[in-house]
Image (cartoon, rainbow, N blue to C red; front, top):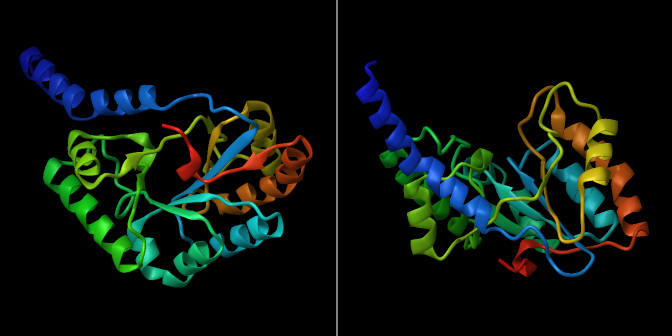
Length: 225
């Protein structure tokens, strides 16, 4: 590859994904008033882990926001129905979890439109979108704007998808990184070596401590973007 071609490819990548991704990361506020936390979960629903997570949230009467992979949601409509019954917000997390940074425009367009259609068929008019890995591109940004779907990224990540992390490590990161008004990103699907099981174990430790510290929990529709 010659230098001119490399420059052109770099400029194309910059305009297609890096710029919109950076824009949305800068746009999201990093502080919300009050002692509220926004628990969000990506990559589900998963038939093994999502029911356990819903049981735990129900035990503590905590509402959360789920950014679901549309194909998984289509395969597990019972879990989507339970999320709705329990008062959780359901947002969009792509059709099959492809990275928007390297997704061609035509594929990105089809991905977004099919995802929206699936959620609508499940009785969920999507209002929020979190792209996989937080990587937007010009196509997904334009389609979200056209559909009136708001972006929602995160403030706190605990790397809970990793196969070599422990529940104790996840819990420690959550307790030390969280601040008033934080949007916390965790995962109830995918991950390595049964990663969601460790996320749930960490939350069993952390949720009582957050509640004891005076935190309340809100869904992303209460977040002021």
